[in-house]
Length: 184
Figure 1 (tube, one colour):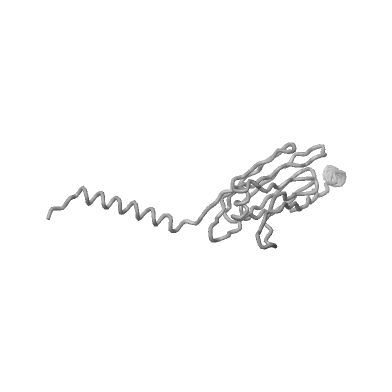
Figure 2: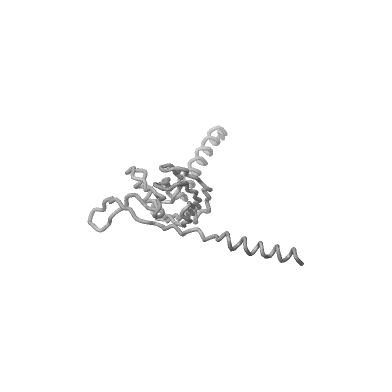
């Protein structure tokens, strides 16, 4: 009985390739990608510019500060969501700034949102308006036997006005302190 080294090496290599492939797919969840769309809709203002910052709470992914100078400009962020058997909710905390003040909004996304966006081509848009941040998109309606997509629009967050800065009080106090300090 002779030992064929070439046949042994080929068999071992094939065995390793099959094992690596099976093991790598066994532990992997289904991931889907979708978009987080934010659009400037600040119509009728002298300075319609908005600045915003979004960060994923679950993964810690920071999308950085973005600026949209005029309507209808904005940005789309590509988001990776875990899908499959688990419906993990991904939360994105977004902080908005404009001449009207600040607004903080938690945007929640699941693999169902990705399905609506990717397969139905109905991505939701978060519109920044003078009233606040508006959700404009479609959601599944499960009230009937066969669920269907229905359009939804609602206010996600209102503007919190900037704190008042009274320049006359601040200057008066500083001026009186400097005068009294100089006369001593």
